[in-house]
Length: 200
Image 1 (cartoon, rainbow, N blue to C red):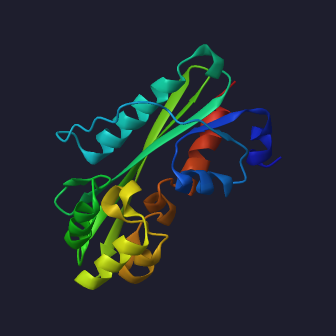
Image 2: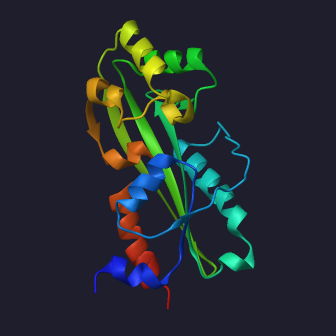
């Protein structure tokens, strides 16, 4: 029996309001419900990007600590972008910041990190996926066009790779494309198989 069929008997919760994560998890042919954790996402800039996304994903998991979640598989995640110098680029506060961040990424390499936490019956497992992305040089008018016609405000790094800017700005990537969208599906599938195999 294929692994996803074995998961049918386990209720799955995705703790994320991100429509991209919801879409990607559906494309794994998994049945799940969405619950949005209410936690404060504090970023300690003294930590490495890997540790930051792990810490935030772990914090999101605390919203599911009630006993009623004990027998449900909970999946939470956090994504951030760091420029070539390691500076964190979260969701922009306004249009001006979105344009500034995209100008900062123009013609340079940056990295996207997603931390994922899995929990079931008292067991917790975490992993972090990294993808390197190279942007071509962007004209100011191209940045203006993207910000005016799309919604960079809810995205780390001020862009969505699945949108127009991903078609015109991304020169190449090293790593998982889905990770840049917010959920590394191939890695998640492998980690889930191992995690569930240990649930005896």
